[in-house]
Each structure stands twice: as C-alpha cells, then as structure tokens.
Length: 158
Image (cartoon, rainbow, N blue to C red):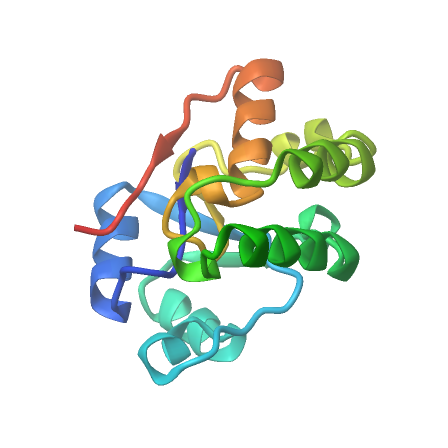
C-alpha cells in the first residue's frame, strides 16, 4: 500500500507517482471530494476518476473512513490556533487523532476492506494533505500496517 495527497502535485506528477508505484486502485478517503483552487481542480472527483480510468487505475470512495464535518472543523480550529493553513499543516491535532480513531477508525471493518483489495496491484490511500502526518490517512495506514501487516510507503511530491 501507498499513501498520497493532492498538494504539491500536478495531475501529471500525481499520475506518474501512482503508475511508478504500481497502483491499481485508489481509495479516496475524503468526505468532500473536491479541492479548491485552479491548481488542484484535477483532483475533484469526476475529473480524478476520469484521469484514473484513462490510466487504468481503479477508484473507490471509502466514505466510511472520511472524517466528519465536526472533526474537520476541530482540526481547522487547531490550525487557526497554530496559525497554519491546511496546505502547510505538518501534524494532526491530538484531539482530532484521538477522536478520529475512536469515532471513525475503531468501528470501521478494515478486515473487510483488506479482503477486497487487489492482490496483483498496489492500493493507494488518498486524501489532500501533502504530508501524511498531517492527514487522517496516516492513521488508517498505521492501523493497516499494525493489524493487517501491510507495508506502507508514503508518496510525496518532488
């Protein structure tokens, strides 16, 4: 498995990273599947799915692993308190991580998800943040590594 975000990539470099890693399925862990700004319009759901299909990469929205609006707002308040923007956050708020784990990740059946993953290709966990440590996908990836023995590589721009 790999993890990847939107920020820092162009559509071309994003696809290059995925194909270079042998990704055959992208799991979209976003609640709202859009990204603001013209630089990242390629990552809006319909465009992203079309781009992935053209590259032979499957797509699946895993809404059950997306943070709730309330949790996202909690993280935004912490970002504001620290004076950082979503695009340059480097870590999750401890309360966000704890609540996401308890409210979203713990009740989710990761075993069933793992059972449905392709055995002949790499799967990517996808969200928007550049740094996985600043994104809930890192919590999902760590759980998959610890409980299901899946090796995880974080794909980063540059």
